[in-house]
Length: 193
Image (cartoon, rainbow, N blue to C red):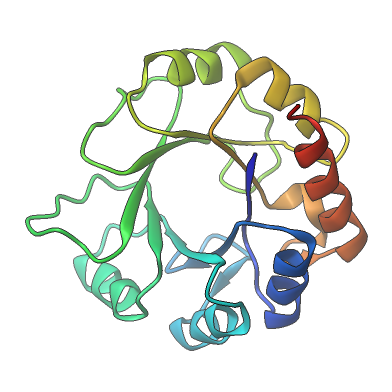
């Protein structure tokens, strides 16, 4: 099972998540309503804190092409976006599209993330998540309300490509709890035979 720890705001948390076995580190940018949103400079520090085998993901709800250019200038491995930007040329970064319950399954990306929570802790919709996994030709990532206590059952019920956690491993928005990070990763890994 692949695991993304998202909403990372401190390099130390990124290093710890990677050391515990996280496959991807997510950093929120250009999302002023999020308490986890960081500047491009801080995002670069966080990305630089992890080794070459950790996937760096820039997460944004921006609608601005200029913001998107600044994000891509950081050279993340992937971008996770909710706005339906159209890419005319092949991007260097992989594109992960965020979908909610009433959104169609996109084909113009590298993966889909089922997420109506956006870091709020709102639990995913089981029937929609299962539908997305069954119907999508692309890898489906599950997010929304995942915690160390419920991630194993979510994986067994949905069978996603990966899981994504933010608030479920925090003491406050953007402040990660290292004990919860380790517990989440352990629970997710044990859920797969």
